[in-house]
Every structure is written in C-alpha cells, then in structure tokens.
Image (cartoon, rainbow, N blue to C red; front, side, top):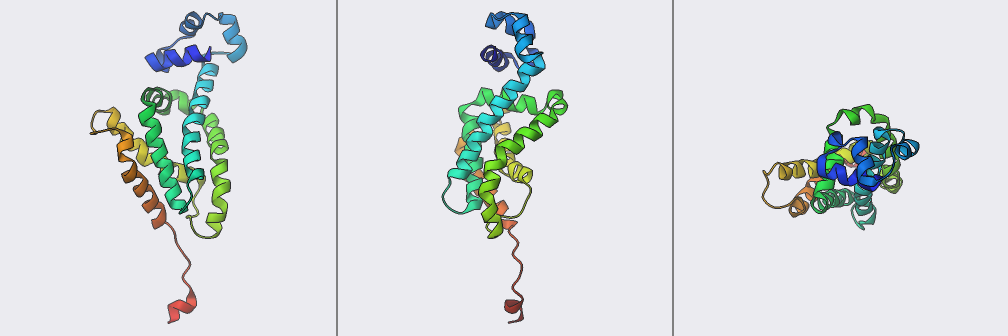
Length: 198
C-alpha cells in the first residue's frame, strides 16, 4: 500500500491521488487500507515520516560523520542536503517541497514538530560539548536546522524552476562555506576583562 501510494504520489502529487487510486494500484481492498491507515491522511503521514527520516537522516549522518570544526560539520550537512536533492529530485519535489507548501502540512504541524525533535536529537547530543566549549553558537535546534537546510533548499528551488546552471550538488562548496561562515559569525565569546585592560 505504501509503495503504491509513493509511486502514485511521485507521479501525480499527493493532492491528485485518491484512496481509490491507491486501492486500484496496490490491489489491496479499501477495507484493508482503512484498517491499517484509517484514511488517506494516515497514508500521507506514513509517506511524510518516511521521506523526512530519509532526508534528514542523510543530513544528520553527514554532520555526525564530519571529523573537524563543528561549524564545518553543519556545512557538510548542507552539502548532504544538496546531494539528496540532486540524487532524489522527484522524491524531494513531491515528498518534501509539495508537502511543505500544503494545507496538509499546516494541519499536521504537530507531527512535524515531534518528528523534527526526534530526528535532530542525535545532532543535539553531539553538539552539547561543542556548545560548552564555545565551538558552536548556542542556538535553538530548529534554528540550526533552518540555517543548515535553508540555503541548500533555496539553491534547489532555483534549480527546480530552471533558473540555475548545473545541479544543486555542483554548489556544494559554496553552500557548505556559506553555512559554516554564518554559524562561525555567531560565535560570541565573552571578552576576557584582564585582556581588555591591557
């Protein structure tokens, strides 16, 4: 059922797919669909969660796997987002972008808040010692996510609109440097009063 719903959504967009379409494509009865998911909304929730886990999982792995300056790690997360957009263009467009701009997303905000918290927790745990050592600015996890994904997603939107030469992944260095520089600029150290008197 989920495979059928995913295929149909990738082809037509989730607003154009009906339960009847999923039933026909999957060969599963309407009763079974309702038993497992309750409604089309239940299926959409499954699609949304699976795609966000894949996308943000790839970004999180890149951050956690980077061995070096932690602000650069978030730049590597942005680079991973661009790779995901490039390698999974249709999935990104249909299962991320179209959900983001939909009424469905507004109506299911609590699902996104809960999922985002769950998915970013390993990165938060990794970041705690870097916050303590002032190697990362002390910002809310949602802001780190926005600052990491925002530039990558803006570049990809230009690509999807046909306004960008090349592919999103071709801009990996530029976007990674931009994200890292932005975070580095937010590092505020308390001045040493002894040094200030000298």
